[in-house]
Length: 267
Image (cartoon, rainbow, N blue to C red):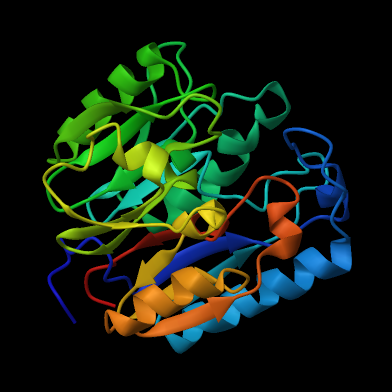
């Protein structure tokens, strides 16, 4: 196993079972609702892929009162050094951090609460070897981002505030880390210059949702409905695991949203 500091080597993850209320999850525009059965099937496939990648998965019970609670990455942030409870930017998600707090306190010696009154969604946070990038967006405001940067500093890491393109839900909607020096990004995010210090693989036009891939140990999970992106990444030598995401995509979600991932020392 690589160093615990590695940004895509994990041996532990937390997920939450989808509730039947997931069909009422937040979405932009007039997308058709997913089906509970469809989301459950995709979630089960995700857990199986995580376990196949040598990750021990802790499955939390459903939270019917919170339709979006399957997306555990938004109310919290985890590292080997500790966890941070966030404050999601959507009113309907208020309370999700409180709900996940007991599980995090059981698993981490250090759990920090986001100070102040700002908002942060974990979907706006990309951990790279150079820094923890926090994207300002409709769900993450400057006050929240600055408060999070302070928490990240307490854990011994460096934070960097960046901009999410206008009209994009989360920073990681448009990007993901492929390896320690390469990112996968949409053209609109690449144009911003935030990844000028990385090698960049640009998503083909029309396949933008594929930007939310997920590197876990030696495999790269990629949404399965984007053949040009899959072909590009395969030719570059990545070990691809295609993942079905059509149902969670109906509620504006992607692969990274579904888990909290970290390297647990001594496991």
